Image (cartoon, rainbow over all chains, first blue to last red; front, top):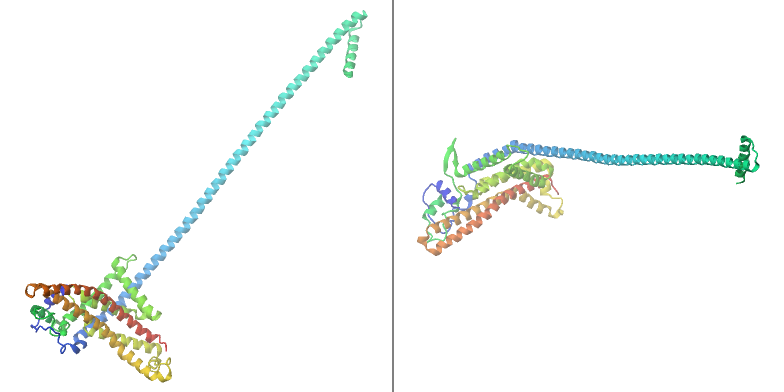
Amino acid sequence: MLTHVFAQLVLAAEEPTLISEEVSEESGGIDLLLPASEELFAGIIAFAIVFFFIWKWAIPALNKTLAARQEAIADELKAAEQAKVEAESLLNDYQAQVAGAKDEAAQIVADAREAGEAVKADIVSRAESEAASIKQRASDEVTAERSRVAEDLKRQVADLSIDVAERVVGSSLGADQQRELVDRYIDELGGVQ
Amino acid sequence: MELILAVAECDLSESAVCAPESVNDLFEFRTAIFEVFGFPITRTVFLIFLAMALSVGLIYFGLRKKATQPGKFQLSIESLMTFVRDEIAIGIIGPTGIKYFPYLMSIFIFILIGNAFEVTPFVNFPITSRMAIPLFLALTTWVIFVFAGFKANGFSYFTGIIWPSSVPVALRPLVGLIEFFSIFLVRPFSLAVRLFANLVAGHVMLSLLLVTAWVSITTIGDIGAIKGAFGIAWWALALGIFMFEMIVILLQAYIFTLLSAVYIDTSVNVEH
């Protein structure tokens, strides 16, 4: 605040003046309301310079700066929008890829399961078939054995019967006749059974 | 400068306040510091050109970089200019107000800096407290709004004022007369005096309070403790007024610019 006093001191001049408790009304009034010519002239020139500077330089500069900023912001927005679109596109791709991978995995699992089932069915089928074959073979062997045993038995019965008959009859038939007789008998027995 | 001498000779044991003989002594700096082509450069003239240089300089350094990402200073200048453009020029006058933006911006910055000299250290003198500046600017505003009125509305601008169709016929002569005096005579005067008187009052208050405080505090041994204590009270009051004046500085620049825009608006967008 003291600067006011100091500033006045710097520019101080002129003569000592009476110090008064009251401000004189006589010399104060109208002079203050009348513009000093050199100040008016200086004011006109100074303001004209400010006006022309603002009109010709400052406002175009302001407009240019604001337009450039607006353009930069618009570009950035556009770039951001573009980046967003690309990001969304990438996301969609990834999601599609993930979905595809899941489908593929599911397909692989399904295929594997199917293949497994097929292999299993094949193995079971082959096993069944083999078992059936073994069973059949065994059955055939049993049948064959049974036939052979029955044949042997039949022969033995025939031989025994001939022996017995020979002993009973005392005469002997030709061996072939006896055998034919016995076979016929046995067959009849079998047919009765 | 009379004030300084008043300070030198002020005797607070005899008077309550240190004041120059005339209030003019606080404002009249008519002694030429030097001359340029015979033109006297007084302290006030020097300050007027300093205000011009600061107005131009501030805006120049604020806008010269044209940075897309502005710094604080550039942003401040841009904000100030866009405020005057959007809130005053276009805000008051409308889209056509952009034409008057250079003028409104010029008066705003010039008055603001001229006012700010009131509280600027080592200057402490508002150039707008000299009638030359407010009067010149008010008359410029007057010329602009009258010219704009005639340009926008032709002669009906004038007839609309002196014979306002929106009032009853019987009252038209009276209202027309009042409007005529109000618009063509009172407006420029009131515009100038409003600014001038505010700054004069502020300068007088600050000067007298600070000088009296200074003298009373420095001569406390001679005038006694009670009067010396008054000096501190003056000092505190001056500080308060100092803060208040900072608001006045901004407000008066804004009001002058705003009223200029309002006057232009009422001339261009006539509602009779």
